[in-house]
Length: 296
Image 1 (spheres, helix red, strand yellow):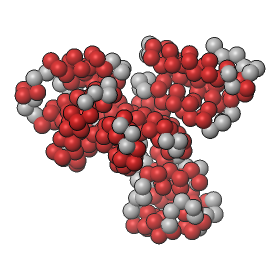
Image 2 (cartoon, helix red, strand yellow):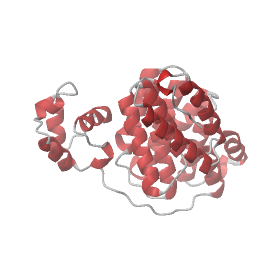
Image 3 (cartoon, helix red, strand yellow):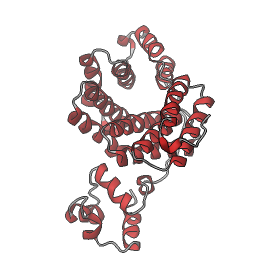
Image 4 (spheres, helix red, strand yellow):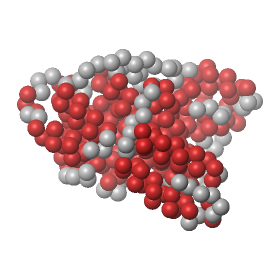
């Protein structure tokens, strides 16, 4: 993390540590961050960066990408999962004999996919908890950090599904605490990071913490742009559009997000997003701010 860039931005705007931290955190928390590198919670860091007009991603170095081929069946199941084709992903996973997954790494990938398919189809919660807990308990964080972060996110989804919002936020926060600095090692890591950004961003939108949601989703869009990836773009910009409406932002900003989402969804033939966009359009047209605007 580029803490010096943060300090330089603070001084350039004439903020003392006391002035910047006011209403956000204690001066001691900010001092420990700047002087000792003790990183505060992501929510605090987002608020501090917002006050300095800094994007959270600006504090983290650029990362490179290298290709790596995964097990074919698991890779195909993951691709179906990315496309929200949960039934197809489930069918592939059900055909895999888990006793043949000799490598621990394969076991954890299998657990991650099984857990998410169950969570997103709102299946048996206890079974999904088992898969995510096995990753958290067994996977070495140093080597398999992305899977641990995915498991935290999955736990958050499960708790949100059953209305345990405080527990959900605990796990979503654990996921986003480290996700900004995660070094992308392979193409699949991009999709996994975007998965975390999207579901965490959606959660914070659902609890009306739009500042945190917008920061996460905007960083996700940047990851897509930097790595020329279009999957997740439509759903991220769509959530940003809904956030903008909830915050009563300028109608032209909302229109820009609407048309961006529509373009990305068409590129990827994302019929789920296109159908949802049509409903969203009708909702906008009922808003007085859009009374003289034609959306197509």
